Amino acid sequence: MKIEGNKRIGGAAILGTAIFIIAAGAIEVSSNPDTFGGRVEIEGSTVRLIPADSFRSRVFVASLGLWLTLDAGTFEAIEIDMENRRPVRIALSKAAEYFKAARLRVKAPGGEKTGLEQCSLAGLYGVERGAHLIPLSSDLTWVDIEYLLLR
Image 1 (cartoon, one colour):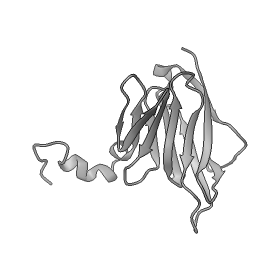
Image 2 (image 1 turned 90 degrees about the horizontal axis):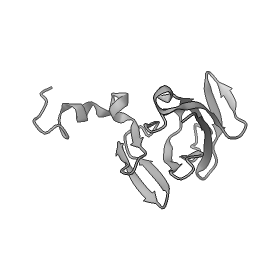
Image 3 (image 1 turned 90 degrees about the vertical axis):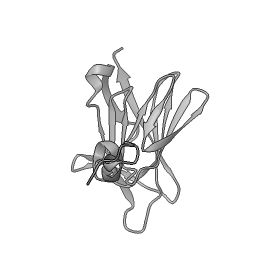
Image 4 (image 1 turned 135 degrees about the horizontal axis):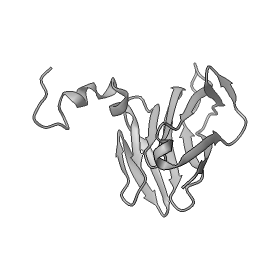
């Protein structure tokens, strides 16, 4: 494959659905939010990421160092309140015929740089193979992720 001069439509973009960093939605929460693989909407102090990549199953919130992945299910939206920055709210797609639960993994690989000490799901969810089992409904399912910042 030959890389074209315009990097936006070149070989890397073609491979984007296969490489997780390109396929993942990433949102930098700052005065000027940016995203890869999605759309950003701002309403007051709330920043909302609408994933638009092929998978809609991976999101990295850069300002928190928070990495969210789904083994089953898809993200519909991720919301972050810029004023109090708690909690991160995620909307999961509705249940389908062959899967009734989402499997969410929450990690903080960038936590040491952002001051993210710990994060957890608000509510009681089972865990299977290291992923939180979140029952899905016939409408969007909202899940809150609470976190503690040391800075």
